[in-house]
Length: 455
Image 1 (tube, rainbow, N blue to C red):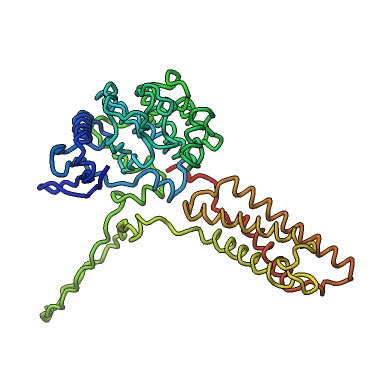
Image 2 (image 1 turned 60 degrees about the horizontal axis):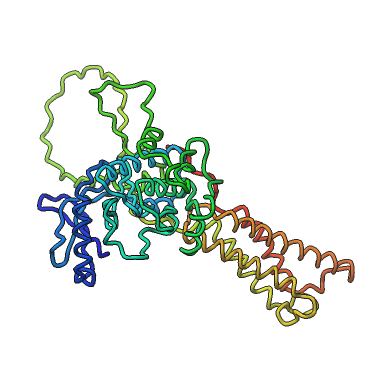
């Protein structure tokens, strides 16, 4: 729709300013729709939404300013720090349910609730980007055949052309919570057509969803909108439980990001303080000759008071962590070793690539399969450095490793029985054996699939 800038009001309040693209600004129909959406967004006034501060739909170019939220988008938080524990997901769901309650109370349906439209702040999530939300009864400006939403987080009725209702946002909320808890959407990954087909005709994959505590997610993802819970039910079921010891109404109880997983909480800008600048040295002052001292009283020892060290945010707090080196290095080593072994003398001076027709093709097949699974694992680690590698990649990598190792063991045994020693095996065979050993080692160096502990 346009470009978003970080701006500030005359008083210094930070705002996010969305400026419409010039080609869209020249379209009178788009200007009318944008004016309608701005008027609708002004009605939303919830704690867990980014309020509209100001707008000029008739400006050149048109623009919209909302309150700036100093936080991380949910998709980046999960990709950088892994899935969330059930307690944090429940707190996230409670905040998003309150946001949807405010949106629906204004007569709106968001229609595009997804992880990138959820900003994580220390005091709770914020639902942003009302750029395509419209009044529930106003759909005349929507083009025929146009699907508004994001693949993997749209409700079935959005894809089949049925009426869009507040239950549509409940379905998207369930998909967002499943993503936060598992690191992947409930309908997997793939092309938009594949995701849309699964949403309409297949059941969500919730096998990795932590239990108990998140059973409500499956109800949110019901195909029939009438079977999904209402937003008020979500708020009541996911509401935070007050502490057992209680507190008086006059006490202030700050949450201070305790609802978040520790890695995400430390990555937010409001959870740390800047380092204290060093105190400049004080020049020495001339000291007058002291008078003759009187007898000093007996000193009473006073225990030293501990001084709390300031919390210092690291310089790279907002940068995604580098790839998991414990997993990346063995995978690269195995990939290179298997590739080199294909071209060096393997048995009786013959290499695998040149003499495939003489019975060496099984080694070429398993080497290619093993290299392929290594490449798939490296791609997954690059996309989500600390998140678990998908289960299908781990199982396939284990299978190809077993095949490679078993095949080499067979050739070693057969060679020893036929000639009585292993001198006929060339350097290619021993590099292939080294690659198999590294493959076995890499099985134990994938990032852990255990979820982070609750804060």
